[in-house]
Amino acid sequence: MMVTIYFIPTIIAIIKNKKHRLVIMILNLFFGWTFILWIVALIWAMWSKREEFQHQELTSYRYVEIDSEKNPPFDGQNNRFS
Image (cartoon, rainbow, N blue to C red; front, side):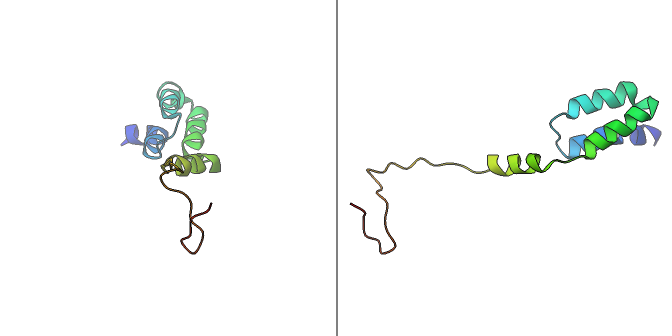
């Protein structure tokens, strides 16, 4: 039970798939006994920046290159632009 409580920052970092989860785990493992660094690791594991969410959203889309000679653009009435 105490081991689980001790590694809460590491568990949270892994669940949240944090970029620096290995650093958080090492900090938690070797310096978590100081309690101050355990709190630092916990805050770091729980902290979420808006940029991280935006990065995840942007990387989830696929971009398709369209060959304009084979597929020319259309206007609203399905007429090809010339």
